[in-house]
Amino acid sequence: MSSAAPGFANPTREAIKHAVLIIGALIVILPFYVMVSYSLKSPKEIESNTGGFIGSQELFVDEYCVKLGNPEENCLVKPYVYNYTQAFKKAPLLRYLLNGVIVTVSIFVLQILVAVPCAYALAKLPFKGREYVFNMVLFCLLIPVHAIALPLYVMLAKTGLTNTYAALVIPWTISVFGIFLMRQFFKTVPDDLIDAARMDGLSELSIVWRVMVPTAIPALLAFAIFSVVAHWNDYFWPRVVITGDQSLFTPPLGLRVFKGDADGSSWGPMMATATIIVAPLIVAFLLAQRRFIEGITLSGMK
Image (cartoon, rainbow, N blue to C red; front, side, top):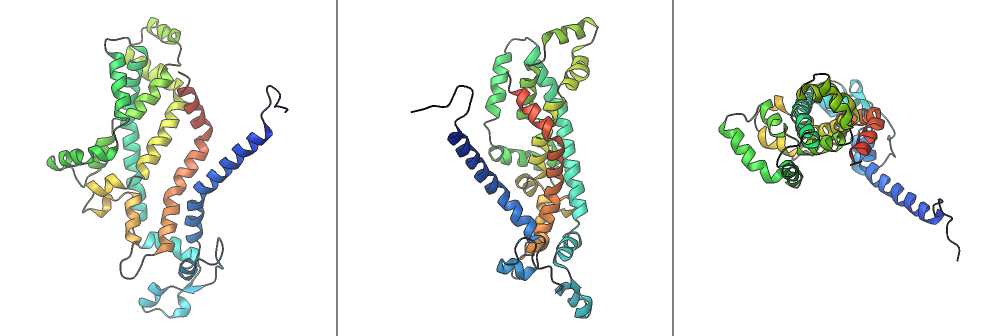
């Protein structure tokens, strides 16, 4: 029986690995395929699941247009045009997208202001109980959001902050994952660099923002992807604290507008809205992919 030469991978094993990865990728991509496909097809094609990926793109009558009293010949529209225009007509989607930007950017900025100094202290400053504090950070990583949702809601309700931007931002300003990730990266920074900065007369806070942060750009981008994706797509918490004011809806909450009752759901516009919501995240990830992988890799070195 022959075995693979040292330094060379077993071809059969590599083929199995690639097959598993391809199958996993297809499973992950399938929902996005359906989402984009439905956003391009007519209601009848969606209901009957026909037409392939983009559908026949035949003109069909916009029933909402006819209800307004317009003749049918003036209400013919392409499926993809109808779906994407309805995404903006049926709901103030631009407002929801703006809310998403305000919330995610605010959370990320505040998380960085808290996480970076904390991570620097845990990585580079010797003090009594440092390992205990770090163990508490690791423990907090195990606490699910849903376990603390009720106490957080009660606190915000007592202070009258529900149905405000503050309710969407304040609970997430401290990210234990951000502290952990940045601490792991800062451990890879040579102590000589910090000692040189101290000899130049920089204070500890100056070292954090003028020395450590510029070296940690890959880790910051990696954390930015995690933070922005998590809070941009969050449905649970906004659904809890935003109960009356639709002008504060975040993009995922905006999808509820397309959920019908007796007359069914507007699947085409709903999928078009979902595509618009997801597109910025995909573009941002593709642009930052290299730095993202670099940040994750370097953060795990120690």
